[in-house]
Amino acid sequence: MLHALIFDVDGTLAETEETHRRAFNATFAARGLGWVWDRPLYIELLRVTGGKERIAHYIAAHGAEPALAGAEIAALHEAKTARYTELMRQGTCGLRPGIVRLLDEAAAAGMRLAIATTTSLPNVVALLEATLGPGAAARFEVIAAGDMVAAKKPAPDVFLLALRELGLAPGDALAVEDSRNGLLSARAAGLPVLITQSAFTAHEDFAGAAAVVDSLGEPDTPARVLAGDLPGPVCVDLAALRRLHAATAHTAATMGSSGG
Ligand code: XBP
Ligand code: MG
Image 1: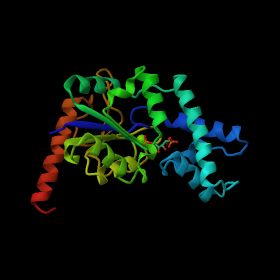
Image 2: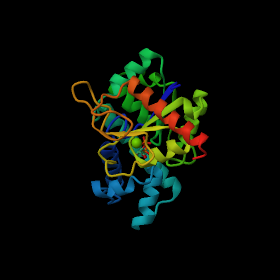
Image 3: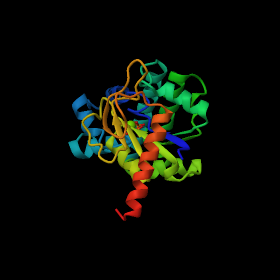
Image 4: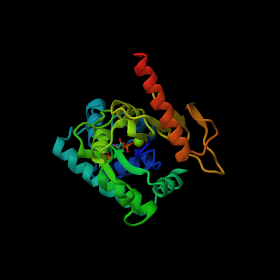
């Protein structure tokens, strides 16, 4: 039985990575660092999840100067988060197609909702409040985010934390993600995954996803099904997710019984 949907944030709920990139660059400029992350470089750097980890990777992999120490990176990232949340409050980002529709349907049906994200908690609250109004974070029973776990995606930790807080087994839930890192994280936690590919992840390998769509779709603009067990074009609703979840449970049971 499907008891909960666990949503990723960046790229899944909203196309936020361009705003993250703006916030990183504005912070670097304000600190006189001379670092500029253009889109092609940012696509490469997105392979590393977590803003602090991404900055450290950039310094190491690109020989960026100065080679900041951990505490300095943390302070720089805190400034970036302040800029990002301010940009969110200015309304720079809307939710992706189908997100509000699905969240409303899930709430009406008593489907439990959670978040499992690498981004920092203030960023999650800022996005939800800017798009769904004050107190919107309460729509999610559990928000597992950022530094709440030591190992970020693709490690399973953040999805395992969300499941633990929900008191559910992996087979009771389905993850909605946009990136390969998120797919690997949720799969390692034992969750079936629907991928809604995003602007920064459309090139990635989504092998292992139960299905891949270009968005959740809306009745007047259904989504394209790019892979997996969904009849396309589709407007992803709870019935579609229940069918997808049942199909993955059946496959897992068959594989298990045949020792596959
Ligand atoms: C995406 C990430 C985050 C954001 C930046 O998170 O990897 O690091 O790019 O946010 P997810 P921070 O797709 O899991 O939501 O700077 O706060 O990390
Ligand atoms: Mg994401």
